[in-house]
Length: 81
Image (cartoon, rainbow, N blue to C red; front, side, top):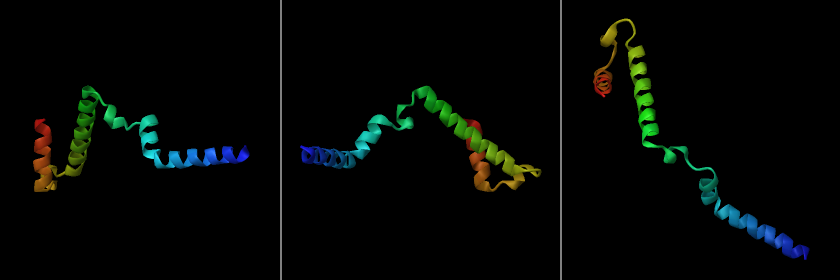
C-alpha cells in the first residue's frame, strides 16, 4: 500500500513539473495581460512623462543646446502627444 502512495506522489510531482508554466499562468497571471484600456492609457502616459522628465533634466542649465539631435527630436515627439 505504501508503494502505491509513493508512486502516486512521484507521478503527481512529475506531472506538476511538466505543467509548471500552465500552473503558474493559471494561479499567477501576468498583470499586463489584464489591463483595461484606461489602465493601459495611464501606464503609457506615466512612461511618456518619465521620458520627458529624463530629457528635461538632461538639458541642465544650458537649455536645449545640451541635448543631442536625437533627444531634441524625441522631446518634440513627446510634447505633441
